[in-house]
Structure formats: structure tokens, C-alpha cells
Image 1 (cartoon, rainbow, N blue to C red):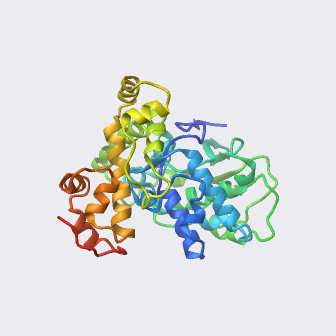
Image 2 (image 1 turned 120 degrees about the vertical axis):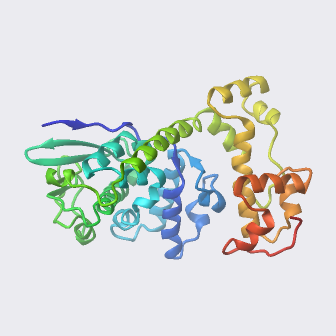
Image 3 (image 1 turned 30 degrees about the vertical axis):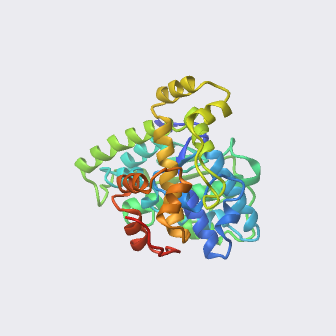
Length: 359
């Protein structure tokens, strides 16, 4: 075995954005399953799922995966069908960094280095061997009840992403899976472009290494450098949303935004966490965030949901979010979005209410 490319993380339990959950919820909705069923058992709301800045822990996405698998247990090759929907744009700045890489090989190295900016549960480790570039997709730590779905989803998503990068379907030389052959391997064959084999020791796919050196059609050194810096910053911010920051945020997110009255104050959150307010502030500061920053994240997501999904007036939304004055809420909302609540409601597609409120 030649040179090995190790991923930046070796475990799937890393914080992630919500784009993957949004994609799975979208698949479910297209097949008649409501978002409430797919998001059941989590603290996620439709508004938070639409928030590009929202962050969740991996176990929250895992709960959504389980809901999806239960809802579509009669759909063959569900993981392949869902994984094929992941496009380079699904991955945000991480995807743009890959697109602007000089070659596919350098894009793969970047993707492995910043793997925690992806949505994968199966961890790839790549190496060169006997004239092939091989990616072994490890699933040993993936829960057994969703392992097959996630292997198929993640492999299909990886293949789709690399195909997007080179502008055509990525030609594979091999595709192997450790589980038994399905009744109909056609969906996997359609994705991989070859006949996959089953009952093998590992999950893997392989390509001719010459394809790695081909320049990418959208390569740009300046954009690549800028995206790399943003990926580094995003990793740091996401890590700040784990631990104590994640615990505080979870206590600020209600189960039902419409029935919500006001967020708990920092003193109440500290008591719930069995610590003093001073200790909580110190821990949040050490994590690179603050109660105010976390509260703003939650308030923004809830405000957008109430403005688009309910007929509540702007004044009512302000009260439910804990603002004493509508003007204070309006100022905060404009700082978050660049729009007043009234304008946001008017231009946002699918708004449920057109109730007049103060600007």
C-alpha cells in the first residue's frame, strides 16, 4: 500500500450544519411525509432547518436519519436515492473550496482535512495501491440499525460530489460493499457506473489515479485560498458550539415556536445547568461565545419561522421572543437579515401571514 490520506477526524460525532437534515426532510416531503414526522424527537423546527448558520450535533442528524429510514422502510436503496441528491452546493463554503481546488486530488486532500465540515457518518481513508487510488469507507462505529443506509448515502454523496467537481460522472474501477447483495443492485450500479460487488471485507471504491491530476474546470487559486481560510474559521466556530455552548443553546430552543413566550434568562439557564451565572459566563467565554450570541442565533431562527409560518403581528412576535419593545426587535432583526420584519414577511416566499405590523 502506498501513501495514505487520513481524514481530519476519525469519528462521526462532530457538530455539523443543517443542510443535510433539510435535504432529507425535502426528500420526505416530496414523498408525502411531513417534516414533523422526520424531525420528531429532536429540538429542530422547520425554521432552524432553513437557517444556513444553524448548527446541530451529529446525534440530532442521526435521529433524523432513523426517522427517515422508519418512514421509508419499504423503499429499496433508500440511501442511494438520498445520497444522490447531495450536490457540491449542499456543502456551502466547504464545497466551494473543493470546486476551486487545482485538481481533483487536491480537492480530495482538502475534503479529508476538513471532513468535519461534511455530513458523513462513514469515515473515508484513502490510499494508493497497485495502480489504483482507493477510498476505504469505514462504518464500524455507525449504529447497526442505520449502517446500510448511511454507507449507501455517504458513498453516493461522495461520488456525486466528485462528479460535480470534474463536470462529468467520475469513472470508478471498483466498488465493493461488505453487506449482502440487495435484491436489486440497479440503483447502486446507476450511481457507480459499474457492477458493484457485495459480501466483501470492506466498503470501498477505487479510481484510476490519473484522474486525480486533471485540472478542475473551476479551479481558481485566489478563490481557493480565500475558501481555505473560511473553512478554517468555520471549523473553529463549530467547535465553539459543542460542549457548554450546545447545552445552553438546547435550553433556548423551544419545542414549539408558536407557543413560545420568552427565552429563559442566563440566570435560569445557569440554575438548570447546576452552576453559578458567573461560572456559566466564564465557560461560554472559554468556548468562544456568549449567552447573548447564542440567544441571538435562536431568536433569529424563531423570528423567521413566526414571520413566515404564522399570521402573528410583528408586535406579537417581539413579545414572544422576550422583547419589551417592538422597536428593539425590529432593530435586531434588521441587524440579522438586513430587512425589517415587515419587509422580510412581504418578500419571503410562502409567508402564511400578511398582517400589518410596525416597521
